[in-house]
Length: 118
Figure 1 (cartoon, rainbow, N blue to C red):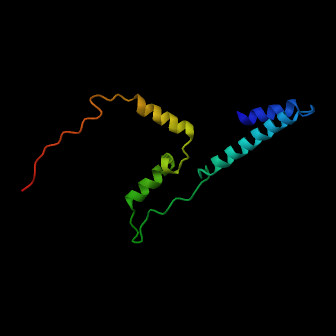
Figure 2: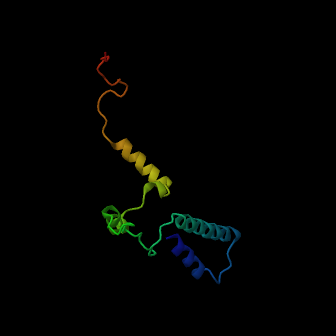
Figure 3: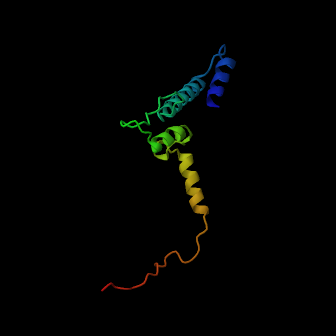
């Protein structure tokens, strides 16, 4: 959306003389777009084809676990640990935690049986 806005401004105002403030705002938008694209490229997710690992063992037998992992590897979702967590994602997660129902006294200590082993 930002990219479309920048393209619109470039096409609409290419023959117009812009003020310093307008030029500064346009440069700021372009820099924001560049940084966003750079950050997204760091995620490492590509749609390129990669040769799967061989699932036949050295003895010539088929390793069933490796074969299944090759079959379903394409459908696995990205791991959260490799994904960037944005402020929006953090806020949404906090809102979900806040919205969950909690019942009972919050300061009550869990009641555990007080037995000692002999």
